[in-house]
Image 1 (tube, rainbow, N blue to C red):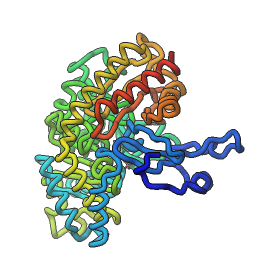
Image 2: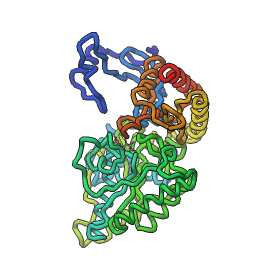
Image 3: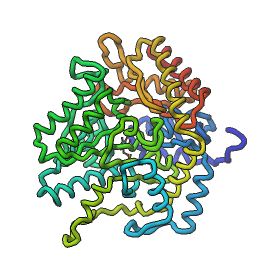
Image 4: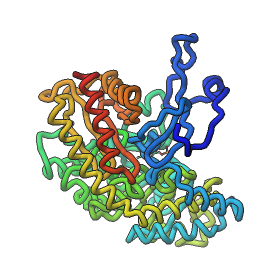
Amino acid sequence: MDGNLSPNDMSGIVEADRAHVWHHLSQHAPYMAPEGERTDPKIIVEGRGLRVWDQHGREHIDAVSGGVWTVNVGYGRERIADAVRDQLVKMNFFGGTVGSIPAAQFSERLLEKMPGMSRVYYANSGSEANEKGFKMVRQIAHQRYGGKKHKILYRERDYHGTTIACLSGGGQPERNGRYGPYTPGFVEVPHCLEYRAQWDLSGEEYGIAAANAIEEVILREGPDTVGSLCLEPVTAGGGVIVPPPGYWERVQEICKKYDVLLHIDEVVCGVGRTGTWFGYQHYGIKPDIVTMAKGVASGYAAISCCVTTEEVFDMFKDDTSDHMNYFRDISTFGGCTAGPAAALENMAIIEEEGLLENTTAMGEYMLDQLRALQDKHACIGEVRGKGLFLGAELVADRTTREPLAEKLVAGVTGHCMKQDAVIIGMTNRSLPGLNNTLCFSPALIATKDDIDQIIASVDGALTKVVG
Ligand SMILES: Cc1ncc(COP(=O)(O)O)c(C=O)c1O
């Protein structure tokens, strides 16, 4: 390990982890196998920039920002830690019925980046922020429409979080499987991935058809029953799907026509990931509700926000004679000041270091490098993405587009890790038979050299594993 990194006493850590920690999204059997056959859980000990070190002192390059698209400004940012420390010593927490200095400051800074939006509701996780959005829609339905306009539309392949309600509004059957019964009132609309097209159309015609499919669902369900449409601007875990041209414009028209609130889930795209502050800003659309989490404080503190327009906010204060009229929701740790204190520094770093510009430039560079890999490896069916949020869909056959077997895709990510200590991602337990997209989302500070290192590793892994 680099001499500048702090010493770590790892004695007992791996065994304590093996014995007691239940890892997310993990089958633990390989850790528990008899000695000699078992693998050790990986412990990440330290991070700097784009690099992390494990329990053996092995340096890795992290091409997925903490595994799950989170550490947008990179590891080891002392100024964020200092700001959080100073704030916690001064005032760490008070329930969210009252305000705090960093919450007020961050909401002001955030809304400067979101013209048309006006109120920030603080919570802790992406799932929770989305639940707030769902609850607002339900309460509006009760207050305005006798409970009728309560249905929430979500899109096939999108993900909005881990709670039962979020899974009920999640379009990834392998994520949802075995957690039913689900919450009623969530209705699926078709995905918009042209590479796996449901209609024999392309480009803008495909985009408009995919949006029109949403209108069909609204008409089928009855517009007076549909309260909101919740969409990721660029679908993340469902396969890094950038909506086709024409899609968003038509979606906006449809929402307006049927008085359906547009809820954009920016949990992954938000705060710079695609090269703009928010993913929806590429498309000139005007959402009613925007949720965000991961990149808001780059994982230096747990924070999420559910941001609304003034029109939505007004519906929760327009009748003071009704004692149930306000938003009767609380999130205990939405009152923790570490989140907004970290978020303020995180945003300042993005501005001072020009990270939106870097994301756009490096995103284009990385997309080009992935396209060059596609020319070399027949198993890459399509590369897609925006900014430093990219995917490569792997296929067994380019002509038929038969997805590459999940084991082989996992073999590619495993090879990058084992051979080169390069951490890349893949779609994971999302759609049956379609967990075949490699995912890349390095921190927004990535350089050409970093990207070259990542691409070289993927090149080697594709040659070795797929041939
Ligand atoms: C698009 C999207 N929305 C919501 C979530 C849920 O966020 P969290 O895990 O913070 O609850 C995720 C998590 O990956 C996500 O990708």
